[in-house]
Length: 390
Ligand SMILES: Nc1nc2c(ncn2[C@@H]2O[C@H](COP(=O)(O)OP(=O)(O)OP(=O)(O)O)[C@@H](O)[C@H]2O)c(=O)[nH]1
Ligand SMILES: [Zn+2]
View 1 (cartoon, rainbow, N blue to C red):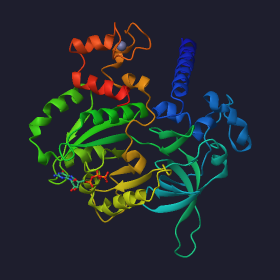
View 2 (cartoon, helix red, strand yellow):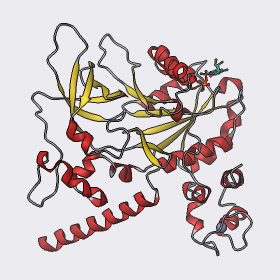
View 3 (cartoon, helix red, strand yellow):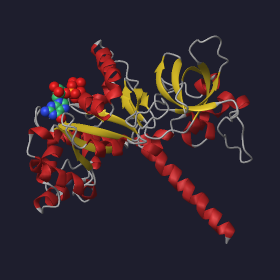
């Protein structure tokens, strides 16, 4: 019996691995879901799984193999090394915040670099790492050496000139900020951000700001449609401080990216959540004006709203970069749009033509579902605009 069970487990694992590989390939290293993104990390190569195992030989001498010949993560001396999170990378240096709230400027162990030569950034903002602090001589900045990167989830990446660029890792969710007025509410734009978040495998939360400018009951139909699709919608006002407790609850203990059109109040909202962020948020956008558009790596900002005297009490992290702020339809191609709209997805395979665009074709299951009221008409209109590239 025991033997049978282990056989089943082995075959389950095999199937699971190959389906994950299929997905990773078809996504061609663009906005990645959690499990496919993880396949790209140095740890995956170390574990020798999948098609990336060809790198096995690179650092054989330094890697331990278990009895089955599988690579395992490099062990670190936990009595000396400390755990931390990478706030930002600057050239070869990564700034790491340790669990006690101190920052260290860290280099990266050569072995980890060798394992990731085809990624532009070996270490990314958001990485959980183990690092070895160096002896500090006389009051200078604290330094260290990154010895191990923990397996990643929620990898945010995009394709640039045919290469995958790692932007941030361990992103748990994305807050899509819209404004109820000034600028006017644009549900179509919210849909575009939702599709991008779906493709990236990130949990989206829709945050409608500036509700002080409207009658909140006007939002009920919109909130209803999104809620039915399983999306969380938070009506807030940065200016009046409304809805902030709910927003803080969503951000607590998570790494969150904020996105949304210019002027909807992202900075105002973040400053309302954590007034201590003010300066840092402004620094990012000031730098972005100077044409940093080729620099896509993100920065992680510790957020603290239960502020006490201790620097270590981080309530959540903001993941920010000019690129994420305007992440509308990153790497999404028209043929993929329907697959990232949860209410369209179930009908797609029932259309007569396998390449149906669900716009002008006859025998289209999606259009039938719209006609029968199973799909919201406004969301379908969003779909047609987005897939036609409008
Ligand atoms: N009435 C009202 N105005 C708000 C609210 N939140 C922000 N604003 C105003 O909206 C304008 C834009 O706010 P920002 O925080 O700069 O918007 P942003 O999304 O960060 O804009 P970018 O930095 O360009 O991306 C400012 O004039 C704010 O004062 C709100 O809740 N109610
Ligand atoms: Zn169709």
